[in-house]
Image 1 (cartoon, rainbow, N blue to C red):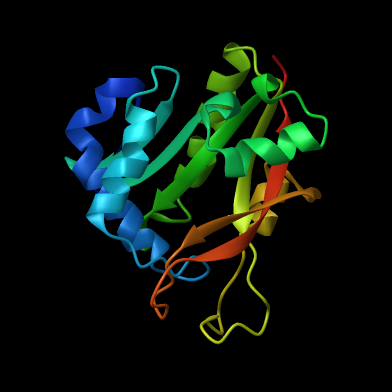
Image 2 (cartoon, rainbow, N blue to C red):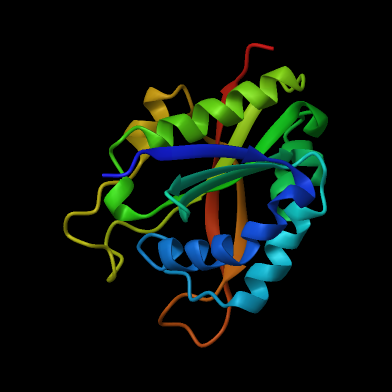
Length: 198
């Protein structure tokens, strides 16, 4: 198999890869637990927020010239209110938090250490920039969800092993359209946090 290469970019440097990244997000997030019925128009708008921010971070994984995975992040203060407000309400200082937007990887490339590299690269960047906390949020689906695959394994073990802790006191909702929905509905999400060594 071709060796996987990782590339880090910030802000507008992501421009040549935006369409490939949008398609990758749509493909990966169609699977459970996100069940995201995505479209390129929404993706363009979503990713443009990161591309316009010179403080954003993109970690891209390539198999040859093909984008097979990506992880993003940016300061929490630059995020939308759904992600920023719960921290302020809980007494955190949003300026101290680096927020991970997503981590997406095609199934055939999982289990090879790429996800770990995504985490380490973002942590190193955030600590070097003086952030004290790294955070992300994950959707929470009921155990009896009708689309839950029988062999589904949540990533909680992976996140815990990397030092992230589920923090139920920090939660939010975010709206998107599931594959079987006619319109967007708000989904419950819980934040995971890790203290960084600056």
